[in-house]
Length: 171
Image (cartoon, rainbow, N blue to C red; front, side, top):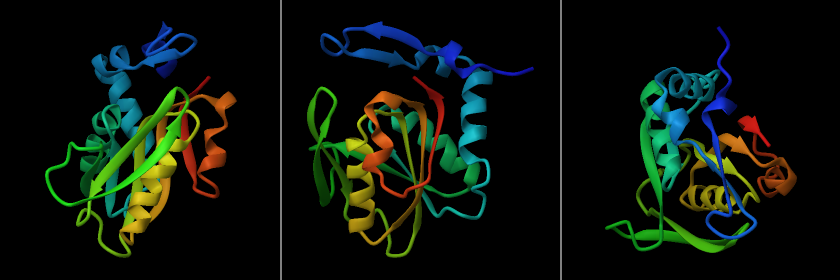
């Protein structure tokens, strides 16, 4: 039986602002077969290739933590500014409907560690690029990125340069 992940994604028009089509993944997450399929596809071919998995707040956490467990490696949260309790590095960036800043603990990534970047949506690529820059600024090497959804018209892959990117559902 083939699972269509797109069937688990609900469109919400004009959220968080007019003209934005929000892709709601909560129905997919509530379906254990779909959720498992996402994790299975995210980890495929990465066994032994990754030392850490980063997830970007907030929905990236939901996807990245089980990926880290499946790979037998640690999970590092990349959070919105002001949310982490220890010393942080931060990066500001533009997104399709405004701007934001994300942070990571300064000691979260060790020099040379191979890191997989995970988030729910690749849109303009600003968030993912900022996450990559944070990890690399700490000495890590981002070996790839996994996204559940990619909004192809926004050309987010361009912001990631030569980074290998996998997206499971494209719009």
